[in-house]
Length: 459
Image 1 (cartoon, rainbow, N blue to C red):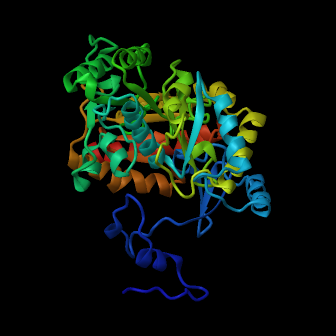
Image 2 (image 1 turned 90 degrees about the vertical axis):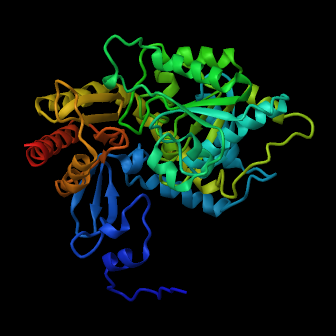
Image 3 (image 1 turned 120 degrees about the vertical axis):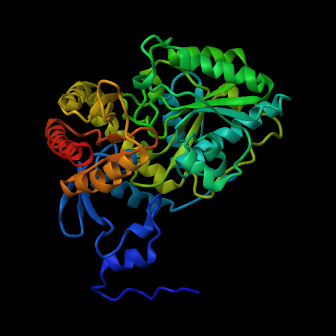
């Protein structure tokens, strides 16, 4: 058995990381003497610093989650006070004040009759819980055959086997198959790639067609992000979610709004569904619930969905040890206090036009094909030919994104996502406190690096 002794003083962090740390979604074989692991050691506001003291603009908010910005010591103070009062107790047949207070607060913030909050430890768990609830809800109504979930192509909904069945990214799914049965996929809203004459509600109608094809008696839920992350911030056409709501109601299918990224100000509202004026049956949350100062997630269910489990001896037989952890709940409450006091969602709405205009100015580069998104959640799609919208092939995309862009953007002091789960894009989701100064920094780095990328890969 491999063992690791306690590191003596002065031991190189890089060496220890390369020998012992198994990083997530990372090509571990790519690290070595000539390619070090980025090690972030401290953070403040919109910026993070590595072990050598180099500063980087956190244009990804950690991973779409440090919405209130880094270094808010009051969150740590809230955690310390909570430790003095109650360090931990489970929600398995017990309750504690902070989970109760946070659940009540979220219920008052959520739209419609979404009044029941089920806590988890993170986003994949939140989606897993929502999918299990959808199945169980129909079973409680004598419709146990309704077990399938319809999601969108290229969408990411998590990594646990149930959530992965909803995830629509082939390369993330294939190495773990067979998955939990029931995952079905329909086209997404990548409007940039649609023919001009296409009906704007085509993708919504495709959901109805899939429900009918599968058999409405077998479909439990439709799960959608307000703005789809994977593929590069796909926004819905006008009326899309209203049409999906009609379809779900017509066929007795629950509508799940996956807001692990889109909730808590990312789109300028506490919940992304408010941005597009629809009320789902379940909302999944995580990430910015605590601004990532502690791991926490959950799902918020409507009274209609929760009702069968609130009577007699019924029980939703599902849970997680650390869900609703008192310390995480205390941090979440402190985080929501900051959101209200500083009006972070309002700041996003006031500044998103300026943020978008900065990104739109990149259209002067031949490599920039499309700019899309909402709030502080945008993507720049990269193309070989602006007129034809021709994309890069796999070899070119590998060279462009991983061979040049990812490393060069980091070297120039900008952390963002260069990704090709779909067509190549650069994604940006800065902390909600970001302002003109940060926008200018993002522009200066992106413009110079993308210009060089064109010369290296295409020129």
